[in-house]
Length: 255
Image 1 (cartoon, rainbow, N blue to C red):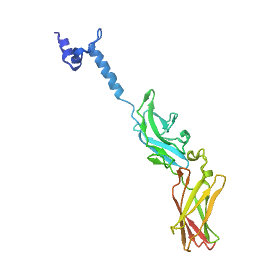
Image 2 (image 1 turned 180 degrees about the vertical axis):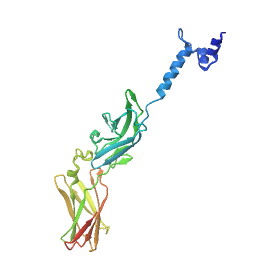
Image 3 (image 1 turned 30 degrees about the vertical axis):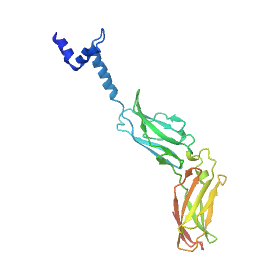
Image 4 (image 1 turned 135 degrees about the horizontal axis):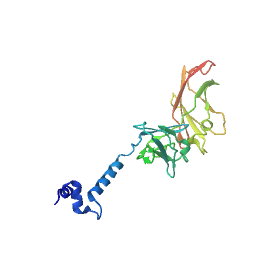
């Protein structure tokens, strides 16, 4: 046997060729080297985005992520997946994207987001976010709550008058209220803890929602907790206090 043949047989690639990997008319060792080189190139892939997070509130939803090397000419594509649909964004070089317009029936559905890096013809593996939903009853790690507008407290006929902008009007362009048919149901609990007042505010009440709360005794400060929901969309609790005597016109409201 020639020395070159001996090297071919007893090198690792040569052993493979001897065991039946020869191809007629093809240099077996050279072919295997090309295959291994191609596999090595494939393993050096574009890094995936990291730490994909969701921020959602009364006005919409934004997805954010991090990337290890922005010096590369890298773009990102976001895919929003709902229960029955999915939508892809345009490419962006930013590390955040408002996806409010990509949500279908957001009052009921839950979603998650995939973020993928793109460079030329290369694409990274997607990175998935936690599931999120405006529907408090949905199975989702992130629950998106609405916020009450600023609350104005004032004395009125010996009671504490509560007034705030109508959320049904204020947030009417929010994804959470898109296609809305429900009214706002809100409840006010006083610090006395025994006189909860619940009211309904309709969308046709264009300007504000308001009611009055009775306190059993007068004090220097009157505090309330405000909670509410619009269908399956719930509000964060809001606390507000009024300092003064509700029997007089001198007062100070503290939020």
